[in-house]
View (cartoon, rainbow, N blue to C red):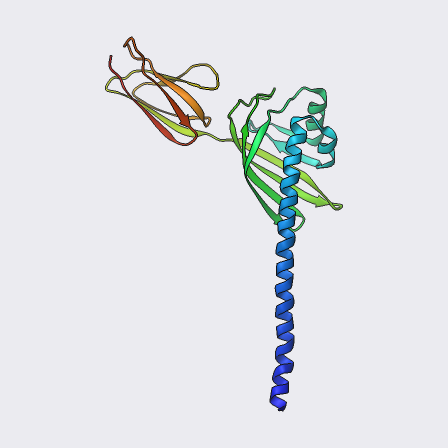
Length: 226
């Protein structure tokens, strides 16, 4: 009987500790999921504010030591960002957000995802341009604020082949833009992921053309008859 009592005395605290630890893990997991949803909402609200010039919301949701690096390697501070928006000097291109992923590390949250420009603004981005981005939030005085941001233009590889003749090929974005030379015979370029019209500039009266969705690595082939 003493052995049984001793065994219960030893195992009961272990059982209670195990249950407490399990409950703590479940609570932390639930809390992290709630934070992820909160950060996603905040990210989308910041996009809405940026594209509509709502500097008041951006001022509250951006840390004073915030830094941003755009797709062209230019950096800006919180003060510069707000000044540009207030003056109308910069009108950001509206864009969508896809593949949003949020990771939470205590009072820090990291957001990654992809953006697609939907309307031309006064920046150097064009309609259909795609970017990968990372945004870092920190919780300070009970409020989540953006502290760092960086984005990178997405490029895809396009290979153009023309045979049996070495005919030059030009291409241009279907959404609008100047004709660009792709080279002859077999050429490779890294281009913005968009839909392009390719034209084989052969000597024949009828120049063959193709409209190709180049949102991923693509090969475009022409059989020239000159």
